[in-house]
Image (cartoon, rainbow, N blue to C red; front, top):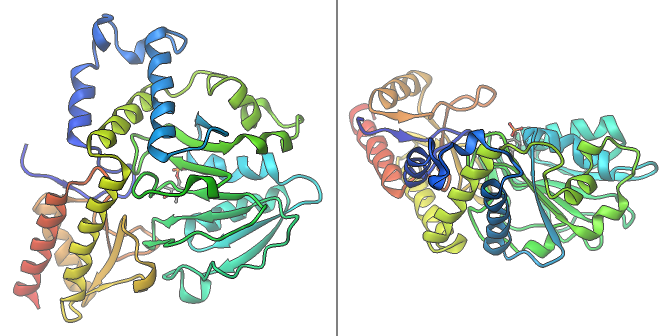
Length: 361
Ligand SMILES: *Cc1c(COP(=O)(O)O)cnc(C)c1O
């Protein structure tokens, strides 16, 4: 295989070692003579994967003992509805931080369930900057405050999280979970589709503080209730077994990298490398996000003209750099440099961008 550098936004690059391991044991999982894809989710073999992945999430995140970890279907998008269905009950109001496409979708879904209030919006900055979160005015009786920690499409990320007091803070961490250490006890519910930083599509990680479960109405469908899912240890129905298996391999890989702190150091180096090329290009390239909000995961940028951008995208593809075209709503370019993208691949991209500028600047 020729050198391929994968910068796809989602599903995104997985560590090469993880893919290798999955390939090696695909047909015969640990000597049982069958694939993990074709055995019961109630089998000892699967149950131990399920349990190990849960345990690793707790350890790597440093979760206090009053949190539950769930593996659910439906992507992060189902959580846009599931959060309000469970917690935005009669007479309550939910607060939303509107900081981009994904938080906008979450807010839109919540409006179908109950009353919402936008506590801060990045609309005036065209979602290229995180709104100020340090001085939010949060009514004490709010159902929850919802935030998106990394807006994948415009490439902006929260540097610090708001203090919501006794109001539960719910965060969509789909595109930056496990990319940097967080203080887990500040959050009441964290959710993340796995396909960006943690594994393949098909499983969504939900981390929920147990004390919240008492608020969930019994009238909602079982499969949509966090309460039911906790009671059944995410085995209410058949879980996405292969996705959970892959997530478990990625979690073990993070442990082998030295944990989340070490991964975060490398992620910062990767992002710095690329932002430096943009900032030192004398305007040939430009980062699209405000500097104080730049994402460490999704680097959005443009080149001096659309002709140059098209030429650049064509050459990138030819040279084996995949997935650099910006999201269809945002245009321009985007390099997604999730945990699974090695430093060397970012270096190769940085070098190519510098060399391309020399030829076309
Ligand atoms: C990709 C993404 C989603 C949507 O995820 P699905 O699993 O496709 O539903 C939601 N939120 C954020 C921040 C994302 O990056």
